[in-house]
Structures are given as C-alpha cells and as structure tokens.
Length: 117
Length: 111
Image 1 (spheres, each protein chain N blue to C red):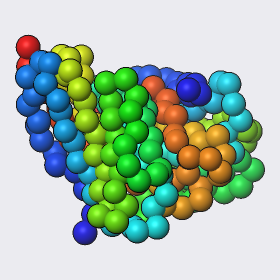
Image 2: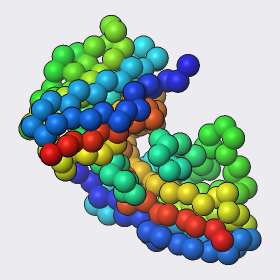
Image 3: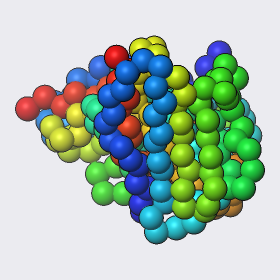
C-alpha cells in the first residue's frame, strides 16, 4: 500500500507553546488528507479534512484557530496545535487518500503522541 | 445513533479458533467498507476492504458484506496471538474518501 509518514512521533511541550506535526505522502500525491485525534481506548475522531490548495474543512466542535491545518503541496499537510494545553494531549494521526475515486481506502501515518505539560 | 457501531469487546478467542467481528452502519448509501487493525499505541493499518455483497477472502481474513441488512463482518481464521489488537470498522459514504469509524472491537487471542 501507499506510504504516509508522520513526524514527530512523540513530542512533549510546555503549556502555551505551539507544536507542528507534519504528514507526508511518500510515494503518491495526496489531494486530500485527514487529521484524526484519538484518546486512550477510544476510536478515531476526525478533526478536519485537508485539501491541497484550499482551506481545511473542520468537523463540528473542532476549533480551527487552535488546530491550524496547511496543505500547501500534494505531498505535505501540517497540523499546528497552537497555545497547547494539557487537555490537548492526545494521539494525532494523519491519513491520506489517493483520490476521490476508487475504493477510497485511507493510508495512515505512524501517529504523533503529544504530551502537554 | 452512531453511524458505525461495533461491539467493544474484549473478544477472547483461543489460539487457532475463528474470531468473528461484526459492524453495523446507518447510512444506506455507504459505498465501501474497510477493516483496520490497530495495535496499542500504533496507528491503524488496513487489513482489507469490500464493496460488493458477499464474501471476500484474503489469507486468514474474510470480510462479509450484507448491504440489505447494513452489516459487515470480519472473520479471522486460525487466530494467532499476534492477531490480538483492536479492529476498526470504517465506512465510506461520500465522494471524498472520508471514512466514518466505529469504536473498535478489542480481540484477545489466548495461547
């Protein structure tokens, strides 16, 4: 399957700082990327849909000013958690789709575990 | 009502037995169905997908889809301890590839 790389895998930061997480599609062009958040023993919660060259579409209840998403190229999307607080500590996972057609399977990055002190 | 529902488990299965996981969905217009496996602390990995009614087999895994009853299942034959993980059912409804995930079923294969 296609390869999606996410970086960093783990990050610890102080409360009030901002953290950027990168998601790259390594062997295909991803017109659409998705950002998920997962709490321990819970399922994936879709945060936003990132489309190359346009604004991200956020799910209800997700603060777009807090979770900034930039999809500047067909192989890179970034999620910036601004002014992070302990409640933002979570496992953030990106995924990419190769296009709007086909079966639509998602390929996931390795995930980034954020801990805010 | 959740859009995609799964029994959270844990589902305890003896090694070598068949594990049977079920998933129901609410959107009749759903087009494609996916099973992902997620080990603790890791991101999900795709096991298989199915979009036509009936069975689809891939190695020890068989996915079954019944659109009329709006359920999809996953069978794991000859279960191994390495199959111990959480299995996520995902459903594609729209054209973006946007998937709705169930809460996952934890499978524990006991030696």
